[in-house]
Image (cartoon, rainbow, N blue to C red; front, side, top):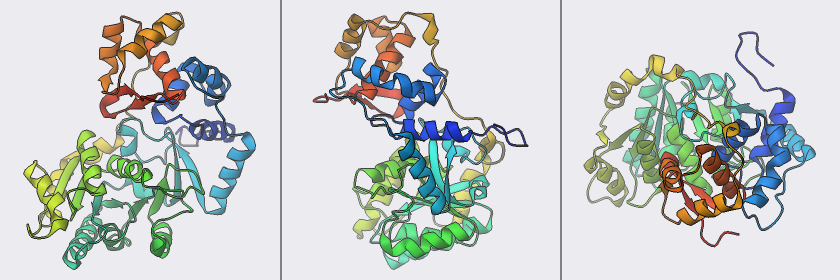
Length: 378
C-alpha cells in the first residue's frame, strides 16, 4: 500500500509479519535483511526459518512469535499512543537508514516530524556535576534555537539536561527497554513532556521489556546512528558515553567533546576523546560549524542497503560447504569478503551459511560487516 504522496508504506499484514520476524530469537537487523533479500517477504521467511536454523546447527526448534502475540504487541503500542515504523516508510528517521544494520522496525511515540531536524546527540555522565548539567542544557537549547534536533538517552544527569534544554524545539529520547518501560523511573514525566511537545521517544525493544545492562549498548548504537554528530559532556574513562562515541566514530559520525578539569574523574573520558582527535566544544557554534556542511541534501540520501547476492545463481550450500565456512571462522572477527576468498565458495552460498549460523545462535556480527563464531554456542 502507498501513501497519497507516493511514499511506500507497509500493509497491516506486512507489519504484522515484520514484527513476528524481528521478534524471533536470533533474528537481528542483519539476518532480517538477508531473509527478506533471499525470500522476498517476511511472511515467506517465517515459513523457511526453522529449516534454516536447523541447518545452521540449532540445538532446539526456533520459537516464532504467533500472530496473536504480534497483534497483542501492536495493540499495546496503540494503547500507549505509539506505532511501529518500518525502515522503508516515510516517517523512519533518515539518518538511521544510513547506519550498518538499522532496526527494521522502530517503535515511535510522539511526533515523527522531529526526525526531519538535523540531529545532534548529547550524552554524558549520570552523576554529572552542576557545571556539566548547565553546559549540556545550554548546548541543547542553543542548538534547538538554530533548528537542530537533540538526541539523547533519557538517563540521569547529562541526558536529562540535554532533553530539558531542547524540549521547546524538538528532542528525541532513545530507550533501552520498551517504550512502556522508561528508565530511570524519575524521568517518566520528562518522557511525557518530550512526546507531547513536538519530540519523540523511540525503541527497537518489545513493549513490556525491562532494560538490562546489555541493552544499553544497543540503545547507544541507535543514539549514534540517529545523529550527524555526538557530543560527550563529562564521562568517566569507562562509561556508556564512550561506547556511544566509539560507535559514532565507526559509523563515520562526528565526535565532539567538552573539556573538563583533569582533577575531575568525570572529565577523564571527554578529555581522552580530545586527545584522540575529537572536536573540542566550548559553545554550540563549535558543533554547528562542523555539522553545517553535512546537513541539507545529505539527510535526504536513500537507505544504505548492501546489494544482496544473487541467491538463484548457484545451488544451495552443502554440508561440506558449511564445514569449510565454520572451519574458517573463529572468535576473531573477519570480513565476509575475506571469508569468500578463503573458502572459494560463491558469495550467495557464504551469505546463506552465515544466515543459517546466525539463526542458530552461533554467529556474532561486528561493525564494518565482520563476523565471528560464538564459541560454546549450540
